[in-house]
Length: 168
Image (cartoon, rainbow, N blue to C red; front, side, top):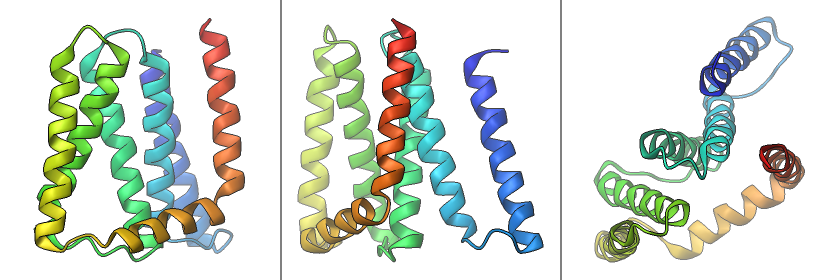
């Protein structure tokens, strides 16, 4: 079984087990929070596993899964207000960050760098014009995530270091 298939199976298993534990009352959390962690972790692991292989479709999909999990975490756990008119600018931010990651993965493709920077700039301008993003509140949400989940992030970093060492 391919690594990607295993990660997808494990992610679904974690979701099902988490939902079952929630139903029987042993696990008290929001379903969106569980889904966000599964998306963040699976997207990050798949991206890390395929980084350097120049498989653009898998890298793009895994980065999108990661970013979606991060937005879910902001939306449901920290009450980040993602209004419907702010969806397009956030989609541009996600796409821009994705192009920047693809450029880091393959530095021969300068178009990825140009598209990434351009889409991030469009996001900044559109968010300012629509007043969809208060930079102070966004920074506050990032601080709360770091403060609340610092141990989880430390374990995730350790996990990524182990995976990167095994790839060598």
